[in-house]
Image (cartoon, rainbow over all chains, first blue to last red; front, side, top):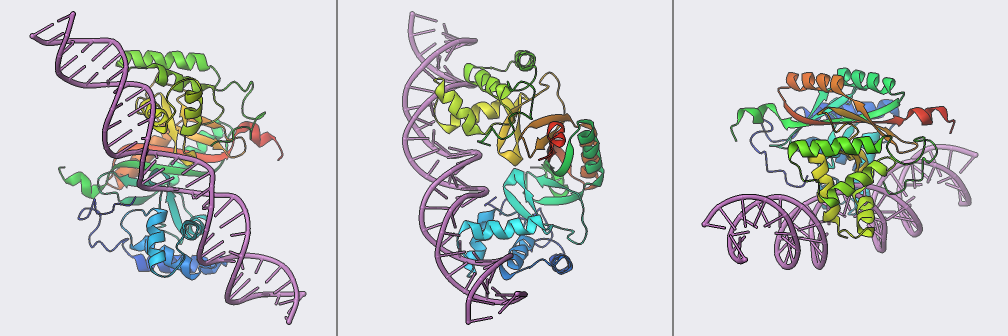
Length: 165
Length: 165
DNA sequence: TATCTGATGTTATATCATAACAGTCAAGGC
DNA sequence: GCCTTGACTGTTATGATATAACATCAGATA
């Protein structure tokens, strides 16, 4: 995702990114402390950038912001910070979009599914315990030892469903 | 995926690709006929290539084979054929791998989940109706109008679970 | 202080994907 | 017959995503 204006007006109330970004950031910081993770300046800032974004951000979108703020200018800078956040449960990678989004519930370990709106590009994190359980059963039936899973749905978000075209 | 030797010996019995490739190909042809789809030479051959492969194939892997056989040599040739197959239910795109795999059950419309082995790179298509139902409920709860979904699990396949390391 | 480790930064390159346009060919209308 | 049309195939060129490999730096520690 590089074009973010698409859904302006539909995706959220105030266009300032994720609702309760401050609260989520605080949860993420707490999680990092609790686990001895080093939430360094680049990593912290990367998380903030994700939280302030509408929808998911591509690595190069993040890189652009980081570079503009005096951090490194090359792709690995962004990929490393993003991968760190993903590996430690502070962000998610949305494979369908080749993009990343802040985790909405960093306080808990949880299974998440992502609801991707094709009209406004918003990405919503939905609780996925039930889905995950069903997947675990399917894996078991296949003799497959499940590690992690990606569950991504595309369709129209609540706001966009109401709008004709 | 570009390296396919990784799991040789673990992923399947005879290393000749998908079990019952001929039967699946016949089903796919029937589906194409029934729907008036044009399974042209490139498309047909692309499907065969997927069926003969171990695991999923990257678009450039497919392209390499097509090019070697006298078809076009440029990326769009492969992407067009692959996208055609995916759009018409004859193949699946595995987003986690940036790769494609033949549909194992082209005779029926169905929901599928993919079990991706991290050791041997095999990709197994598992029935996903229950998972899909759970996802539909989650979407409904979120007021999300679900269109399609991607469900991909990573872990160890049955064969690789048995092998120590 | 010397050393080690993890983080950050760089250069360079690999990998995946599509836009835009030209040529081909079969089907159907005249 | 022959022309139009539309779908398909092919090309060139470029864009977008991602990582390998190596240099540097700061803080922890022996």
